Amino acid sequence: MTPTVPRLVRGAPMLCQTESMTPSTVLVAHPGSELYGSDRVLLDSVIGLVHAGQRVVVTLPEGGPLRDALREAGAEVVVAPAFVLRKRLMRPSGWWELVRTGWIGAGAAWALLGRTRPTALYVSTITLPLWPLLGRLRGVPVVLHVHEGEASAGRLTKAVLYAPALAARRILVNSAFSSAVMTSTYPRLGARAEIVPNAVPGPPSPSAPREAISDGLRVLFVGRLSPRKGADLAVEAVRLLDERGIRSTLDIVGSTFEGYEPYEESLRNEIEAAGLGGRVTLHGFRSDIWGFLDRADVLVVPSRLDEPFGNTAVEGILASRPVIASDTSGLREATDGIPTAWRVTPDSASAIADALVDLAARWPEVRSQVETSRGIAADRHSPQRYQTRVAELVTSPSGRR
Image 1: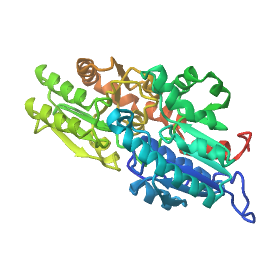
Image 2 (image 1 turned 135 degrees about the vertical axis):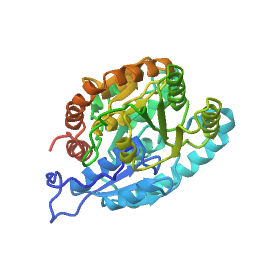
Image 3 (image 1 turned 120 degrees about the horizontal axis):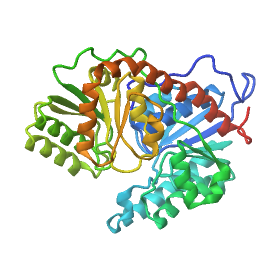
């Protein structure tokens, strides 16, 4: 998540069209309309395509803040039914909904492909399994952007999840970890895959960390509220700091997926039971997180399971804040070489608490290194570089200008 809508980068070259030519159409399919990690990456992809002179039509299953941001970026947006593969649909209780939404979504997708007659189909994430197949059947070159890295899934589950990639002409992957998981299931996909590090815009002018933290650490969590993301571990870490006589506060910014409401309720109960009601605050979803990072001393990213990448961790680094992240999968890539990043044992509140204690003890040193960290992250995740490369890969058969 980031606080501002990415703007069209000025001064980038027009890649595929001239003003005298009728622009070709790229149809883009995306599974949601919020402004979390993959949503913002999709927005940067669309900005790159628009800047390359393409007519971009984006289909979303619902309205939301992403729809408005896409229109502002110059894309046409169509809200239409879609089959989005959710975990709840894989259970027997969800099979009827799976069949029903699959049938309706396939019809809507087929009609939209016929109506727009795109020269390329860009499918964002593997949770839209019908789109690559339908694009292939329509004779449209398909580019699939893989944001997932389901290493912990069983062999059959991964075979089903990554099967749509077999219909794609080209596959963009957000990290080496995600690519390795995909090719371990279907090795032949490696020849079609290219790693494109996520664009992660930073704040316009990040503030420096506080000079002193004598009044207690201000800890921040940003992300989905789910067991996987581990907001409860951050709460437990604050409780453990209390036991050690170290005062801290925790701001939790994020909301649940549909079906995960009981997790949020359990989180509230945990906060109340620990007596942290006055120092742990749930703010819900916020599209603008820079204000929260500006007030925070440290960002925690305590994911329990593998993450394909770590957009949130990079955002913390770009905001000139130290980051404590689980030592796993894509989070390793996101924090690699960053002097103000701590990597801790996954699923361990005590490891997070230990890192917070260490960070507080080394605060002057940390403050002196945040600008170095920010420079590294800004160079790696430049939005302009990302936008240009995605446009090349989607619009050019060879992926070159």
